Image (cartoon, rainbow, N blue to C red):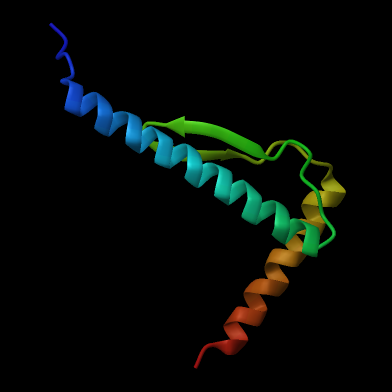
Length: 86
């Protein structure tokens, strides 16, 4: 027999779902802004909603050209960060 959640447990679950959704929205906004700086767009980038109380971002499909440009930008950023380390 499944366990029924108490009112308090349902509220905690709802709050964690809301927080996960908000985290997804913020992650999408941050990634879109970074992509704009790099002159890139992922057309299907969106918040996929909370899954198991965790935010999930759908990156979606893109052309091979955009994927290669994104790889270049990430690699350049990683190299720049490595250069700043003591």
